[in-house]
Length: 296
Image (cartoon, rainbow, N blue to C red; front, side, top):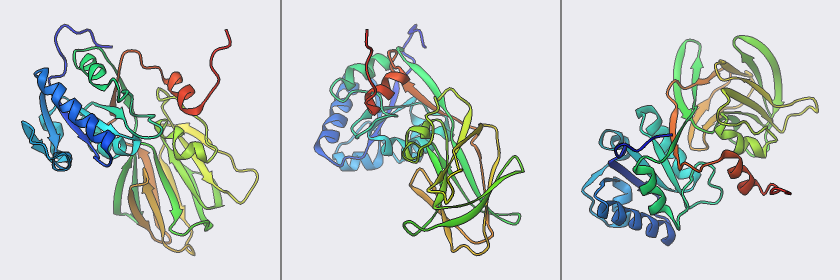
């Protein structure tokens, strides 16, 4: 937690997908409020075009890190994931305003976003590192494609309810062969996303771990496995499979041909996720998952 001897953040990047009036209203309110409070604001280029606003500075997404101390993403977790994959590599801290459905990654209440954000910018915040995964598709010694994920890397067919076959290795040790619709390899952050729907465990963000969750396996004995976050996971696809896909956070898609290998490891640079000082991970779980409140 930071002690505000002086404002730790002065330059703010602001972005969001302006797809409905509520998101647009929140973005405009934050832009006006931050400028009135004498903060330097840079708008992401597409956001500025959608808003029809001219900010002090407008830049494309991949250039924001060099012009800001913190990024503010308005929208749902999907908006946060897309931006955060870029900001993680640049080391730019990120905070989110929840205008989506779940909001596991977006903390700020849209009705109080400006005041909460001003409090954070003045130095009252928590900062939490969140690990990412990097997936590399290999054909022999040749690297074909590389993708990164904050939530999960998924090996699957491009057809619905289509069984595939593959082998799983962890740190070069054979684990099992699998006949299933695919496999989800996820971070602790992703344990409350696709993996949760597939029956995977909830893993708190402080745990250095990677979880493997088979998708509709054709055996009753298959179960999720939690391994060290330092592990190297290798998926080897069967030669008779059709072309498969690797999806990173459901966005980045890469083709996997028969016989290709997919190497999945923790990305060396974490995402620096910023929270208000009263943030509690377990309260988020209770609220989002409808868990029972205290009895006494």
